[in-house]
Amino acid sequence: MKHIFHIDVGSLVIKMPMRNHDHILDDPGCRYRGNTVLKLAILDDYQNAALKAADWTVLGNDIDITVFDEHLGWDESDIAKALAPFDILVCMRERTRFPASQIDILPNLKLLVTTGMRNLAIDMEHARSKGIVVSGTDMLPYPAAEHAVAMITDLYKKISAESQVMRNGGWQGYVSESLNGRTLGILGLGKLGARVAKFGLAMEMDVIAWSQNLTDERCAEVGVRQVDKETFFETSDVISIHLILSERSEGLVGVTEFKQMKPTSYLVNTSRGPIVDEAALVGALSSGEIAGAGIDVYDVEPLPVDHPLRSLDNAVLTGHTGYVVKELYELVYAQAVENIQTWKDDAPSRVLNAQ
Image (cartoon, rainbow, N blue to C red; front, side):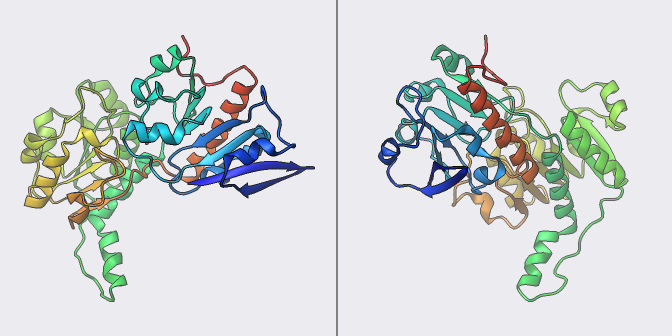
């Protein structure tokens, strides 16, 4: 955990590490709202990027900022102990959950800022009933699609595997495969799925699509073929998932679907972990039922150290970094600062839980 305290010295703002919150109240340079310094926590800043991505000094020196650079875990009482002092929380997507039961044990919480304009991990209505404003930020439409493309390319061209061969002193350890002529299956042809589909078309792949509400018109618009579910899983050489997690999509890819897939096929998931039955995925990879997978999202995040996926040579893994790019951090944290400032001015912006 990193704690940052802002002090005004003329026009200079100094950032000083502090170990004791009580020192703040002794500083005569602080401005108060009702004799209280507002306490702000930035959560799950794994790369320590938040303070660099935006200018937080514009909020003034009546806000004390604490950065949590590790996940607080899943125990609500432990989370409450860590976050109870804070008036404002800035959370990164669904990394930390705020159901009603968690909100109830955060007595000082007044403003919850989430990156993105949708966060299913926050009970919006309950927050509103407690007088807590929840606000969001814009997101960029392309990073996750780029990540999916990178994973597809890595699986076929063995880039990360060849890099490890070179680091170990070897030379040409694998025979890669061409994308040209392969069948790319897009599971969810929304904005992200369409971007990945266009990559496949550029690589002269045969691009097909399926989802429960997909229309012929949408497929024609993107330039891909619509097929039924069975054909989709049976004929795709690589499947890329681009669905929103819902009751309908949870567990959509499981034992039955893996049995339908070719033993030479790959699965890429940059959407949400629970869309894929994780135990079935481990089984399919371990048994050779499918050739490999590129996975960025998991049932439990961060992924436990001893999770079996970590030991599989045919799994390309990243830690939910599909959307983590410098440009997005600069956007969301700048807008988080704006949201805090407008809330302080009694005119909150980008409110997600307004009546």
